[in-house]
Length: 274
Image 1 (cartoon, one colour):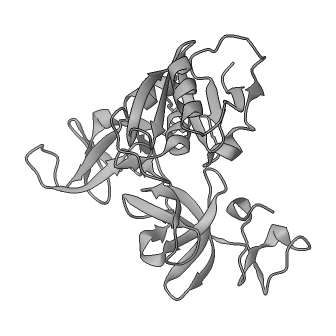
Image 2: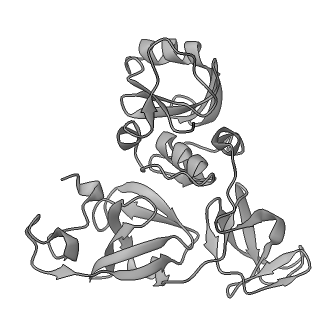
């Protein structure tokens, strides 16, 4: 089993894995939510970052031990470790941040103190409205930066273009830093289309594009360990370590550049939309 998608460690496993894995105990899991703006989902306690989770995202906690929570992210099934302090009780959310980023304020005016940064995809429970501001239990957010849960965008490529210039960060999932698969995931999720967290998993999504067929906007191009989003038949956007940022490139020049760098040819072309 792929450890990234298997909700089991050496201490516990979710109940549905009985008979499939060896574990000291099986548990139903505990519903919780991410309670910090941005949390690193780690391969092991104190270990390397696999991905990141955003404020308000739903998780299922499988085990708590020595200050660490082993959990499954409900948006994509990715499993890993967070400090227990990054989690809060499960909450029913009403809205999500639909802009590349925003701030949480301690009052409903631009002059009030910004108390936290929020990123694209953050999920909030709005309890009221004060003019152009949404009120939450933590503070106030500009209402224009929010959409109701279920009210999605419709163009993943445009969402990705809103993140142009974002610094490259391995395992990143936000405007603070993002990698290739993180960019694809957040762009499509903002449009109501779930993708796995890593490019090798994403390369099996959607349908294959016939050899020689022209690319359409929002098609995905894959290399070994890399993914880009087509903007048109000849332009693409991706987060790349080559430029340490989210950039647009011509597709053919990018294919040639990547091949010359020793990173191989395009391995898959997939269509998620249509």
